[in-house]
Image 1 (spheres, helix red, strand yellow):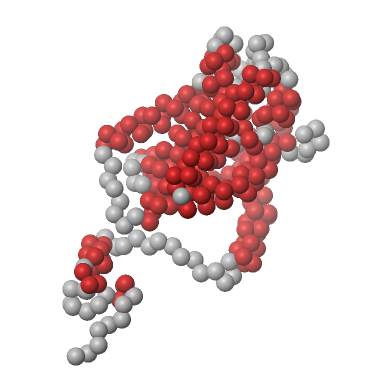
Image 2 (cartoon, one colour):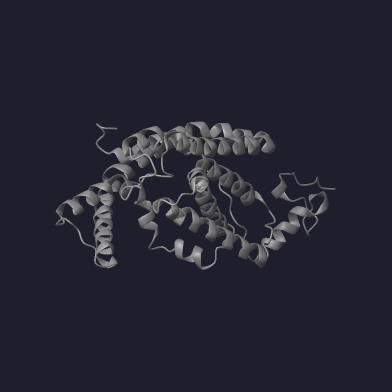
Length: 311
């Protein structure tokens, strides 16, 4: 850690380990969904329990505090970072939640008849996701205030990342299945697509302008209002996206194109094509007719049968 040029890129190595392990869960889900769900649940629970145990054993806070470290927790920031914060065994829970969501959505995409969700279901889902997401973000307040709630600190540290991933899973599920409403309209806006494409390069570069802008500012920094902090964030974001754009054009996109040339040269892509609105009912009825017959009495070529012999 001491000699790394970009120490915040620890996430890349952690995600690579998850990527290597993902076939264990995906193949098990495909062959036996019950066993796959059981294994996934056990691993998520074990990871959460390990988080709670590590907090108790080392007296670490629920997550790393960059400032205002309460005296009730172990103040060794580097030790916390190396022993727990970056270790994959403590972070695999949210990744498995994402795998389970992808598995479900793949099955949903393959369904011919999509189940309609009631308004009660939609309202309940959005309410629970909003509350749990809010708690995952702001439930750290008792720890920041050094409240003597040890059980709460352990529970929050063990579960807040997985809970936040569940809230995001609902957001993705809702937008994918057509019940996202204005949230889906906003997030899928065409002006946001370039920003999402640049997100990886911006992540790699963002810490440099963050440190650089603070080093240029006079110390001590006095935040009389929130506007000064917002101004710093806007400047850092603009610089990050400027250099992230250059990084994407120089390195990321060329690498993706080279990979596409060498790895997908002879691969034919297959994708699900939605039926047109006018012919959807007709196509479904045609494929469901007995003896694979079309309305004209001939055998449907959609199902791969040969036409009847002439009488």
